[in-house]
Image 1 (tube, rainbow, N blue to C red):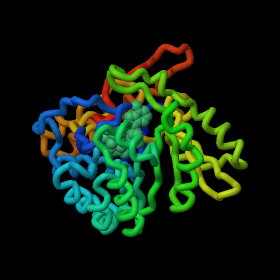
Image 2 (spheres, rainbow, N blue to C red):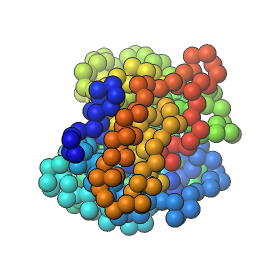
Image 3 (cartoon, rainbow, N blue to C red):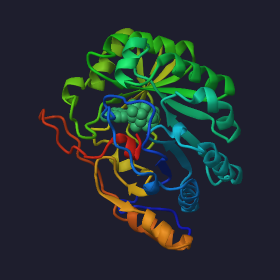
Image 4 (cartoon, helix red, strand yellow):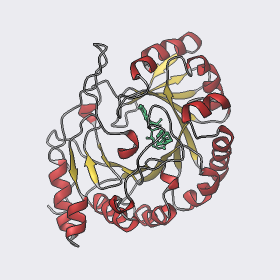
Length: 335
Ligand code: SAM
Ligand code: SF4
């Protein structure tokens, strides 16, 4: 049984781990962080060696896809050491894909090294192509730096996918421009519905909420949309725009219709395992990691945690009050 795959109580195999390597970020996107964030003390973070041990244990239990996220993963000191170390699992064939989600600000520095470590695809989060709006939504980010990073990534041979949060009254009028820009650069594009994460303090997410059903209808006015059967085990659904051949994804985390095929878990930079994006319930893996050198002990703790993965989640905007709102910030567990 020691190396039996991770199967949850609803018979779903867990093969995909999303790992947040830091809660820090060089941006302060309004829907993700407050301007004056208090970050975790460094001692609470797992060291790069601990992250390696945890990931290696998960991979030993059947995880085949590892996505590194944050915070901004590329601002974690020494992060390339970690990527380089993970590449041994690609070499052995145990890991099928090593990838990351990034705001793109450091890609001009790291793209070549990421490629050399075996990364082939990156998701870059970008909500607008307007410099002034970009500065407004990210507060601290600068668009030219991100565009330079995307250039570097493509030049290095990385396939880039753009993730854009759909925000009412913000990037609605840029829909065509973003679509055409991605087509020109041969990048896939996924829209994400804004989620009620964090304390909701200064911005009311209901005001920002732009339903992807509306967005899809808008797209349908310009393109012939063909639904694609492709499923990732996550909340993304894809269409092809027949006129341009582009693939466009929609991530609607508030809908419940993907939970039954959910194959993923999230690990925070402090070693907390979240088995469902919509639940605050988590299992601490840092204690078993630190109290014992035995990987079997750690594997047992992982199995116990997977054994309580909930069936589904509870986000719901339908009654115009925010139900099922989780209290943690997105940068803690990663997106
Ligand atoms: N810093 C990296 C980045 O921005 O790509 C990785 C971490 S970020 C938390 C991961 C993704 O979560 C980004 O695509 C971001 O747009 C998305 N995100 C953050 N807060 C969100 C929210 N409240 N609703 C929907 N998506 C959100
Ligand atoms: Fe940073 Fe990503 Fe959150 Fe923006 S969405 S503040 S880039 S972690």
